[in-house]
Amino acid sequence: MTRQIVLDTETTGLNARTGDRIIEIGCVELVDRKLTGSNFHCYINPERNSEDGALAVHGLTTEFLSDKPKFAEIIKEFQDYVHGAEIVIHNAPFDVGFLNAEFTRLGFPLFNEYVSHITDTLVQAKELHPGKRNSLDALCVRYEISNSHRKLHGALLDAELLADVFLAMSRGQNSFSIEVQEENKIEIIPEIISDAPFDDILICHAQGSELADHELLLSILDKEIRGQSIWHLPQ
Image (cartoon, rainbow, N blue to C red; front, side, top):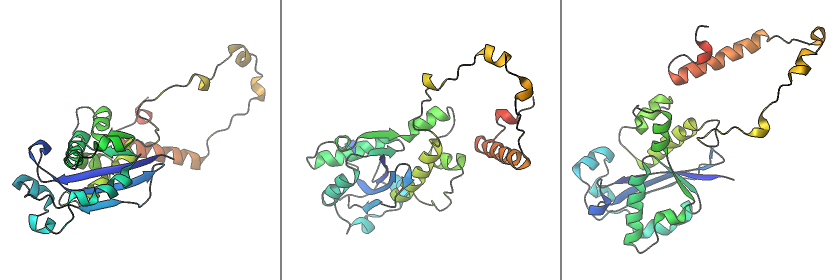
């Protein structure tokens, strides 16, 4: 069983080193690449105001957060939720830096030490789409994932969108490297082919429905790459 947690945070500002704090954590769980519905979401009282730029992004006011639990009150539940999982984050150094700062402030080991691995989807997106915009919004457009309801940034909503993007980016792959296994190679023996009685070879032509399914698949590929796949290029 592969357990992955797609995670996002919202913060009072951009720099944990100068005292900015986490104000929201949103997580969704994937088990064997399927959403389980077991989410983790909480707002957090940061005990300080958000910077104007950050407030314009997330809209979480000091008044709204004033009666929410402090990080010390949610850390144990959060630890238990993420423990041992692979964590999937877009621009991981930002969120992990804030989480590590919160854990250190409370005298706990770094966040990294509670999880098995951290996957950065921004790094993966740059490898798949070099030279293109790879923000979460841009990836939603590229993979045709609706984010029309995303008026402001929210940790749980962004985690849900990122989960869809992550699954789309890694569709059909167990990893982002493609390895050719030696044992899967087929050895062609010319002597056997040349000696084969061609009159006895049965040729099965594709039926109309099979050709239609094949054309539909090629059309889907064209749509995903926003162009023509090599199988649709003029011969």
